[in-house]
Every structure is written in C-alpha cells, then in structure tokens.
Image 1 (cartoon, rainbow, N blue to C red):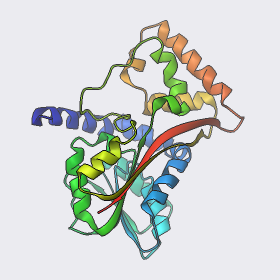
Image 2: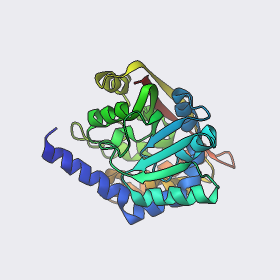
Image 3: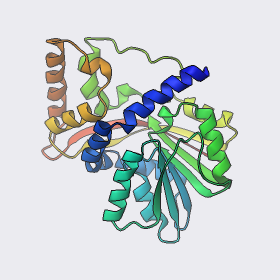
Length: 284
C-alpha cells in the first residue's frame, strides 16, 4: 500500500470514529452492544487466557468493552490499558469506569501503529473487532509483539462470514438483493477483512508470532429490545453507504423486509440473532 493510500484510509477511519455523532451513537447503545457481543468477549477472553494479576492491553477499546470486563477479571493486582484513536470514545469508557468503581483501568488515545508503552510491558494484548480497521496491520502486530513480554499472549476477534451472521444478514440481505454491495478497495479496512478462514492467523504468522491458532465460531448475539430498536441501532452504528444511499421506493421496501425478519426472531424480550466470529490467538 502506498503512503498516500494509507493516509487516505487512515483519515477515513479517523473521520468516522472520532466524529461527535459516532461517539454519541456508541455511548447511547453501549449497554445493548455489550450484551449483544458478550459471547464475542467471552470467546476472546478465553483465547487470551485472562487471569488475575495480569497486565493487559486492549486495542480499539471504543467505549470500553471488553477492557472494563477484563479489568474486573484481572482484579486489583492486575491492570488494563485500553487504547483507541478516538479520545471521544475513550471518554465514554472513562465515564463508565468511574461509574462502576473500576480503578485498575486507564484509557489512552493513540494509534495502534505507535503504542506509547515500553517494551515487554504487558502479559496479554486483546482486540475485539478492531483488527479489521487497522491500516498497517503488519506494523500494528509488530508493536503488539514489542509490548508483550516473552511468551505473552495476543488474541483478536474479527467478524466471520456475513452469510452466517443473522445480526447482519437480517438487516442487509434485503438491500443486497436490490443493489450489489461494492467490493472494498484492496487492503482497505472493512468489517469482513478477516472473514475468510486462515487470513487472520496468516497475518499473525507473518508477523513472527508463535503457537498461532484460529477458529470460526457462530455465537449467540441477542439484541435486548424490540426489532424496531435493533433496526435503529443498526442504522446508527453499522449501516453502510449503499444502504443509506439507496433510492426510494427500494429503500422503504428493503427496510420493511429487514424489520419483518427481525420480528420473526423476536421472542418478546430480545431479537435472537447470531454472529459468526473469527478468534485468533498466538504467543510472542
């Protein structure tokens, strides 16, 4: 990737994740997303082998998960540093930490390509749904290896195949039937960057990690609320441009179909969707 192209992608990511509307939307839906992605966090934590007393670095922490959960698991003798390019998102995480009395977590705004931590500072590095959006993944993984202690673990969660994730397909399939989603540019950050089996573990091996393991799981991803609320959250947080820009009346028809599918998955308490995820782990 050329420097100019990398800078273009980097600016897009910054513009998206640091904007006031994005920060406000993620703050609004934080509790619901924490529930919906709890199984993702659990799988990531299991792969990372989180234990009491560890020092853990969480990359792309956003509004605080799973860093806040990990801080509780490592206990008062452990510590967590959560990072993100968006200090606005991390400000929300700091507020939640204060609210919940979590004193062993700090949140530092930085680019994962240049981490402000010393060599061998952490026992574990995690990232939930962040690795797909790093611009220079090789550089980020080199930084992860640098800050990990010898033998320390790294664990990453990424989205798996869209076709196996009803939390996405329920909302997006009606639009995809009417307008073919554009292919992302080569090397561009995007949600399905590591959906193909073996691609994330290949990146870890190329970066020099050991004991690399990867698995694709389909986990429960319930949205704790009615279908209309899930659709609203999807529009706020994850709606791609081809959905937003679809002309009428196709957009209205597709929206109605998406809501019909979500209603068919509603049990009166939650919309029972599922998510395909990729979990990759390795040691330094």
